[in-house]
Image (tube, rainbow, N blue to C red; front, side):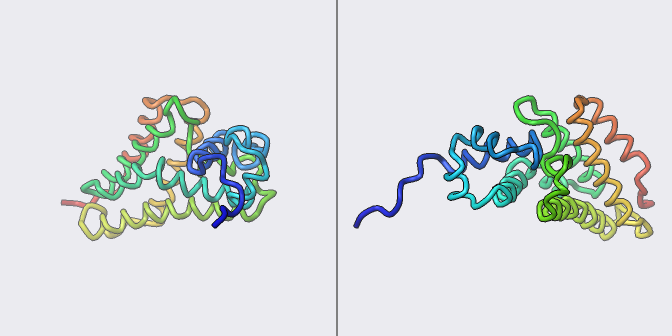
Length: 200
């Protein structure tokens, strides 16, 4: 039986990772088709045939970021013995990622839509949803802390989750602006200083 269609002349996983890095570095709007195809090593028709559209490619790149780059931070949040240990560990894991010299600084999800993507409401909504999902992770971990007794039952979990999400976003922006790990670590410790503690 004859082979259908022309064989794909590139590795899809490698191309997707290159697209992820391009969106991470330039943001959604700044990652032009010229930049994307150059980074991925493919022509526009191949990009559309394989990934569907720029928006679809971006969504897949964000999913890849979460499953690879973002995975250690989420694991740190879940596996620490207390809620605040988990939050501190997650923030620390993120600043390690944000300041790796061989990849773009900061967080792809925080920064990818920061510069002008309001022109694409679907992309803005998608990225907002992903950021809200991180806030919900913080809230769930704090709720587990209440159950375990290391977070007071009177704590405002919504406000705390919003606070640590804001800290995470700020760390990403500071890293993009050139802050080093020591400077970012000091921000984390300041943010954790006045966390409401359960009395033992």
